[in-house]
Image (cartoon, rainbow, N blue to C red; front, side, top):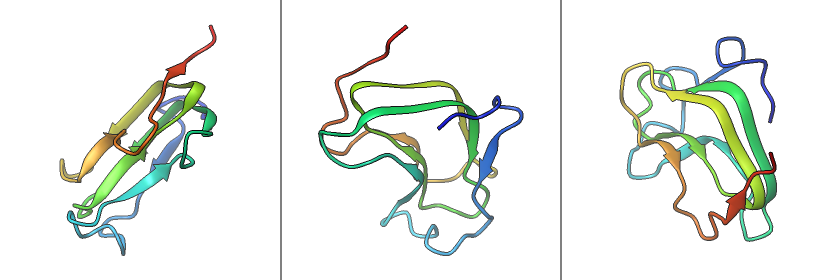
Length: 100
């Protein structure tokens, strides 16, 4: 996923979005593939905004294997609420090395 810069590419969840109101059942705005074959998950140059009134929102639920990166990414909440900005708690969150 490649944006045009944090100031220019903003993925924003609607305020009080259906399905994101329960902190005991969190959901991600962006979620990479499941499993230990989730290769080359690159997220760069963008902002994820979880909006306001979304206490169950996770900005990015991220795993990658072998190679992958997140660079120049901002995760924010419109009201300072939400479950997590970045979640890396599923099985096989790495290892993830990034080619330079």
